[in-house]
Length: 171
Length: 380
Picture 1 (cartoon, rainbow over the protein chains, first blue to last red):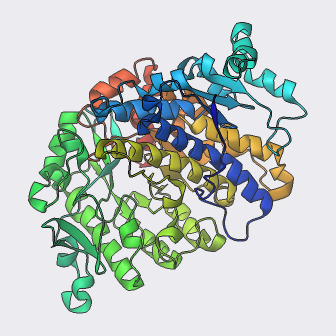
Picture 2 (tube, rainbow over the protein chains, first blue to last red; picture 1 turned 90 degrees about the vertical axis):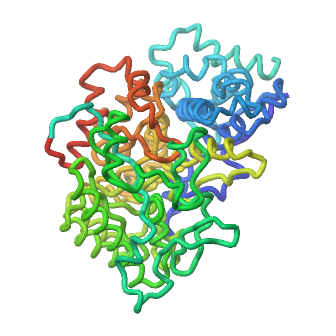
Picture 3 (cartoon, one colour; picture 1 turned 135 degrees about the vertical axis):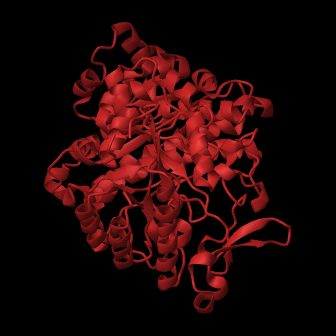
């Protein structure tokens, strides 16, 4: 069974926060845009902390994670893994390889992240609408999909929209 | 000065000499409150600031200079010369292929936070001045390859603005403050409150960048789990710091500061660039979805504000550079982060060759030195 971390429940304390007296609207926008700073630390902890090494068949899914920050986590963790020789301390696999074997992330409105899908791993990406939250692409999901998938071959679209979730949830 | 290597590092750290503040301040007036180095019960030396021992894991963060990138000096006799002596530093820069180095502190904190935390405001201001004068009198005097930046006494808006003006008049080319001063010193207002507007106005007038070093906003970083061994803890720490910058970039835009001060130039050293396209897409998405034009008066798209005013830095990224046009090719600076453990030292040349292999020369030059030369007004 996959384990899900829904953004950013359980880590709400970690926020720069809007200024005292800021409008709810501003606070909401700031919180939503901040949340990936937390996702990236959650996944960095999974990759460097050793849990995926100890449980090589465990799968983690970042729900409402976004995907554009993933290259950051993979490049930064690989760099630190190599520079600090963590392979000598029990982390045998490169963090980016571990991610591509055991983690999933999802998106709903991005384009820049989709352009780096080969690096993230096309097999690792899921799609969501986040209905009925304020950030949701409802009721224009088709428009946003078109935007995100601009230039993406149909075969890869099919993987992201159908084959990947089918595999994760054994549909 | 002609460039030898074509590389400007916009984020390196000096290490303050132990008698810096003791020499520069009145013993009669301040006594033991002056920042100084003292031997602790376990034989290790630590900085003591306003009577408080700093709980750092070493006397000076110089991991890049040790073989395992982790063993750091516990007493001053172990501190490598190249971190505190400008002439030895120039030799290290030559060996690593760096033309210019933009300077940040260490004992004063990566963003000056150890000084900002001083409760007595007059002591805080004087400590900032002594550091800032040392950078000009010792480092810039030794070589124009050092780009001097001043720390601000950010416990007070007025004091910070005063020191910014004084420091720039003395030759400083950039200003440094913690990303969230109110978390460092309860006397400071929240960074996003309009109380700071006099400082932003002063800095905009001075026409120098304001720099918020990664890792200087404690509340946005996960705690380091005690389950990590020292090498793992170091690795996670270096990853989490950059992630925190993402929150600050959002905040600087959505607080309205950059809308009100269109010529303010914030730099986010240690930020990394991989996640910036996502940060900008997230900002634009919320701006559009929440109708922030009507609801908050934010008439311009957040990514346009970023592209007009902000600077981010890269050092360990290759894939991130593929997204350089989303980030903005004129918004990216390169850094080495010498002598901290995350630094590219002593492999800067090899890493640049590897990370920039696919970039056209024009893009490469912008990121490696042209953007920095423009921002810091270097005559090259």
